[in-house]
Structures are given as C-alpha cells and as structure tokens.
Image 1 (tube, rainbow, N blue to C red):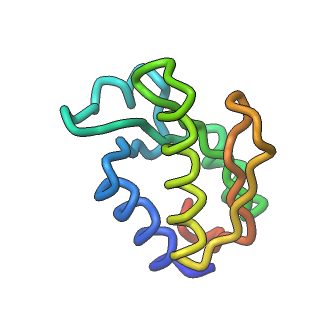
Image 2: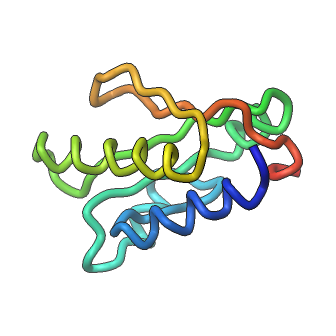
Length: 110
C-alpha cells in the first residue's frame, strides 16, 4: 500500500474523533486527547521498526471509558477507515486484541 493511503488512514481516524499517535506509548496518546475524542489508536516505537522490516503494523487502540459499545464503535471505525483507504486490516474480535494492518509500504516507516 502506498504512503498516501497510510497518511489518509491516520488523518481520517483523527477526523472520526479518534486520538492518533505515531510511535508513542499509551500514556502519551492519553495526553493528546481532545474533548470530543471517543477513543485512541497508536503504535509503539518497536512496532514501527517491525513494520519497517515486514510491512505489518500492530495498532493498539481503546476508549476513554470501559463501555463495551464505545469500544466496538472505536475498533469498527479503525477497521472501516482502513478498508476505505484500501488497507488490509484484521482484528481477532477480542477487546484485548490489536488491529493488524498488513501489506504496508515499508518506506513509510523509515
């Protein structure tokens, strides 16, 4: 997938009230929350290195509450946005599972 598709994916998530943080920790992403944000999506520095080597990126995600419905809304927004941006995304269905984006342009992470 092209760098443009990946950029669009992250930009569009932000437009969908999801806090996005590149190469950071959960603590960092929580500090970037906007009042209207329902949830968050981020990847850690070591996941960036892995994506650079493999073209596979593991995305951590969550919500600012423990509401199961909000969790489903956030993860489905991530999956829907990946599909809209022509990215290959997988999620195993557990609230503890990360979203996996595959077949990425490795040059994005250099």
